[in-house]
Length: 556
Image (cartoon, rainbow, N blue to C red; front, top):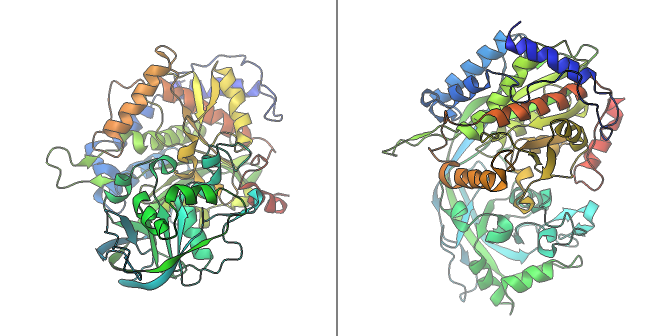
């Protein structure tokens, strides 16, 4: 018996000792102990291979993509996973993308002579989400719409009684909970979906606005102005038939200082207006000026695949558990004289290798009652586009998705006492996780900076906002040997030195026992769901619960 088979057998004994009951009930200790630091010995090979220089940073529609796809497909086939396209025997789901490069963006000018033009990159960033070579927004009246939020479950509507057709709305970043720090207001310090700038763009379009501008503020945004203005203006989107004509003509940001210029004309300031917008009865305020801006864009079309393999359920094949990670990273920087490869070892070869390790492990197990689907998505780094496409074009109905687990930037620093849940308190899946975490002698912890909105910045979000309960959890900072300070130091070093930089490379000195720990947890949660009749839900008050509840009839 090889190591993987032995571990599979031990795992079955452990799960057999766990009663299929409500997640809040504790399982007994396993009759046969497994090695908590050895889930799949092949994980290191997958991680090192995917992050190798020859994979060229795994950018969509590149030579690196071709190597990545061939490698993963070969493994899926070797393990006997069912392919996404059974007729062609292919694991590929093609995702149509459009690449948009603004070639010229004018300064933002105003109808009032007492307002100087806002300079591109210095005072504002703007683009058009529409697939058009030229967009000219001229003399669009500006209105301050608070946070730009319509959240019925929180009794909040910044657009109540407001007609913004043809107008440009100026809105705040984050949500009222962040500013109030009151747990009874939205989710308090923890950002909700409504705090994300992407939501604000979407809502402004639903309201019929011609333009939407978010005011940047480092605290509630979670990053500085340089993150917005300092990078490449190139953008990617899904290639939709309507060419995004249902979006606003202009999206963008302005600095806090620029907002002060606009509000000063009303005898107010950014700080005063932000404070006023915190009140539930806040009414939108006309800024008594009109804005003009033009954007020229060059665009081209390309395709990049999601990779999908699955194990069909024995008795309930449409009901399914999803494991997800993004295979793509940022590719090459040809003008970097020292190191032009963004290897993306932690982000996210680590998560891709995790899904592969799980897929291989599951292939050695008895067939589950429900299907288990392994989805490796493209273009996460371009705006969560592969997962967005999959969510709109799922292999199986999302109403029949029992739940899912997302893996993004896994723990490579050794065994941790804590298992950190990003978006802590969101769903009942945390109850399933907690009992297995306890079996490992560990504890579940909330993310340390919930105000950053990390739950809405990885691929699981696109399934979550369509109602599927998703778990995004990973080993935290409380190292079993060196303590919390060590873990925090390692995370900080990664962000400063390697995150989205060529330095994110495989390190043979990494202590991958922590990943192996967490892979057991991902497996046990998924295996229980795949062999039960349970349907976990979002917790009461969550912004996605109503969508899940509305699809309940399809699960009868």
